[in-house]
Image (cartoon, rainbow, N blue to C red; front, side, top):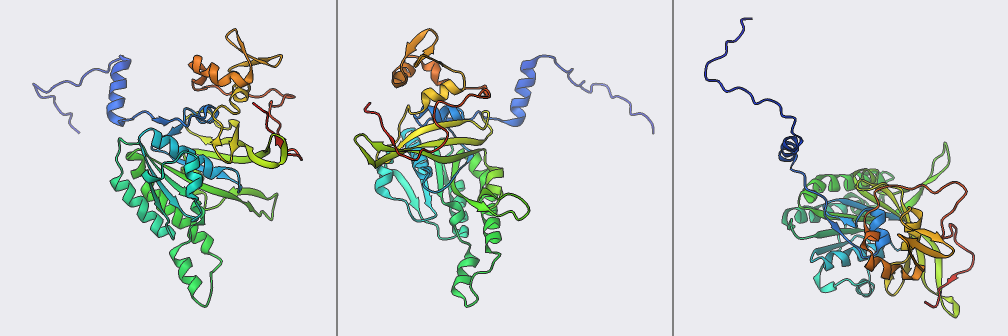
Length: 354
């Protein structure tokens, strides 16, 4: 094949540059990447365990057994978004949200969009409308409470028929949820809308090995999520002077999956039934576990300063570097345990007078 002759006046290609800033500008123009924006919960232990708070434009799953403060955590996130001037869209799939309980946790009910979808198809249509009309600059959170509890339209038709519900409805339900989220998740992320789904865990029977617990609704929910939180109830808190009156409990939150910070971090927070999560509960233990501060003779030591555990809130206000994100993961040495007990005691734990 004859070689093509170079014509006169044809511009030469520019030489490759070793300047790193030129490559940075080129890659930025090609990808159009925008940094992740965070909404802080004002619960420092939870914020640092996740990264810097709740990320915008991502899919977050909240998983746990019943009565583990999952709905309370989601309502705390809604309060944080409203505090930041954002919008809250609450999709009550199980039809069980209590308005008074949401108001107790700081949610402004007059500024919340509350809907009750009846089936998966209606849930998908609502997500489609949100992805088209949601503002991109304003923080928006969409909460799906009890997502796997939504029935399919075919399941409702079979329920009214004489044959009853078939055994394959669980498979159809998982496929419907997968389709609803897969088709709208990309558009929601482009609008920088946070989608948060609450899901429970069930016992999965394995005839060929040990049985385990997994979230319902198919595998797509955990695979497509950018952040997955597992909630476990640990200890009950009783009122001072009356051990039979339970006023709250300690909740352990494990970051099972995290694309923003090292995963598998654990934090314990105090949850009160009347006020929600106590802001600085478990914060000192979290900092000790991951090497931010040191405990000596019952006192906390940080950069030469010595203080008590109950003063952690005041010290964090004076030293904001304590609230800086933790980028490294510190493993607990063998033979040592966390400062908080790992198992639930037989008797309720009585709160301290302070």
